Length: 245
Ligand SMILES: [Zn+2]
Image 1 (cartoon, rainbow, N blue to C red):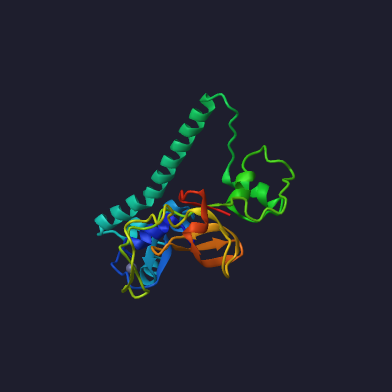
Image 2 (image 1 turned 90 degrees about the horizontal axis):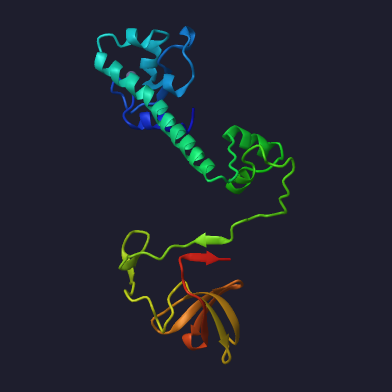
């Protein structure tokens, strides 16, 4: 069961009950399948190969007789994922009922239904397409007009508090000025520069990277333009932590 968070947590939290950690761990059934045990997470534990073999199809109580504290620990860990699931479920229904109280139409659907809706229209698995497939109100045919990237805004953050940049080995390579505004601009602003003189004549619109010298770099649609004087720049949009493509 790759990627099962409850089991991974159990594996990460120690290893086999015998103490073996530095070995390949296997998934073991607490109640053996041959004795009516299920494949549910609540019936699974992590064991090393030799313990798994030794236990074979014994009942866990039999296998761990004489190790009652270990037995107790395994059984209580096995119940944990169900407690988590119960908490999620309770929260979900509470949220649903609160939303219904608003009087607005509220529709819910299962993850299975979402997948069914998406797969039956041959849509790829992406968050935004999944969102369009939630619930029974999903139309039989969703019109997805060659949208490759529905969200054109990217969160870029507000920089870091690093006092100096470092190279890949962690050695300082350059100082980062504390004061970020140069001639009224800061890195991340969107500017329009109309250069009227020199080799770089032209109009450039894009994200600016400021330099203390007042000679800025502008990242335009067509690439990076370096060495544009602040005198040619006009602010279009102040940096707000987002990039707009
Ligand atoms: Zn073991």
